[in-house]
Amino acid sequence: MNAFINKFFAIREVPVFIALVIVFIVTSIANPAILSRSGALDIFLGVTVVAFLAVGQSLVIVMKYIDLSVSSTIGFSAWLIGKSTADGHGLAYTLTLITIMGLAVGATNGFLVGYMKLPSLVVTLSTMYIVRGLFSQISSGRTIVATEVPKPIAYIGLNSFTVIPYMFIIVIALVLISGNILHRLRPARDLYAIGSNLPAAGLAGIPVARRTFVAFLINGLLASVGGIILLSRFNAADTNSGMGLELNVIAACVVGGVAMAGGVGTVYGALIGALLLQSITLALGALGVGQFWQQAVNGLLLILAISLDRYLTLRVKPTTILRVKS
Image (cartoon, rainbow, N blue to C red; front, side, top):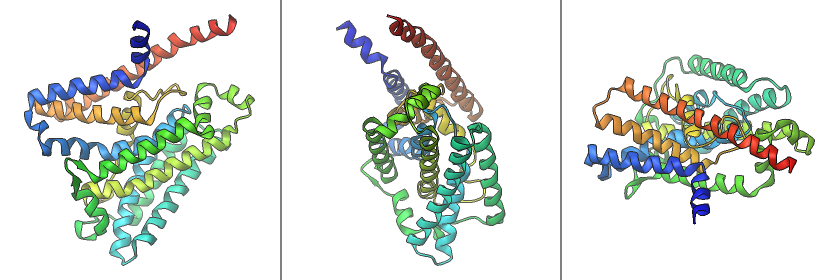
């Protein structure tokens, strides 16, 4: 029985889920309105964009990389959708346009990191600024208003199935599909091997550069498709759309157990991490805590998550060495 309990709590997502339950209980005590339909909608709507982006970001982080360009990509994509619709183009043309844009950003990141061996932090920071600069230049300060949002996208953002918004249902579907792929497909499992030990992965015959390229490519594609979620969430878009989201996405992944040291984590944990951060924000708001301190608490939580990840990494490594020697 003790062995089962230890094994159960060894799952990285379990402590995060327990923390989520505790925060939800505390929040409901401080503000019973959170148990209402509108309260549930606030949680689900508030987490959709970050959770959607966290799926693609998880693929990158488990390889011990990072992608900061997702915020610019999703913001530009949301604006392009509205602009294309306002110009009279159909939804098929619009989706093709944002798909090409996302693949271009992802391919650029993947090529420079995977094949040119450049640091992912520097590369994606550069592409973040490049995409944001192009976005600002092309948009010329124009704001996409509600009347310019395609009706199907507006419908997704404004409607729900009981207390679950359609947007969040889309996120759940993406998480389930991605989680199943990461668990079952060999190329997806290779991402964990690369993050755990890059030289060993290469010696084992894993095409490291190709896997890295594809991971960034998928992340770029998801960021551009995420423009649909961002636009449906706010029913508007401007030059500042998506700005700063990259940090929230990374925080959700790390808090959810996706190790910055690479090789560990799931998209399920990233989703739970996003829900936990959103619940904490609502809890602090219910307790009358200001926005500055809300951000400070989230930052502290991120530091604690990284510290715990580092502790677990150092704790596991000696055990692994002893097993190899024996």
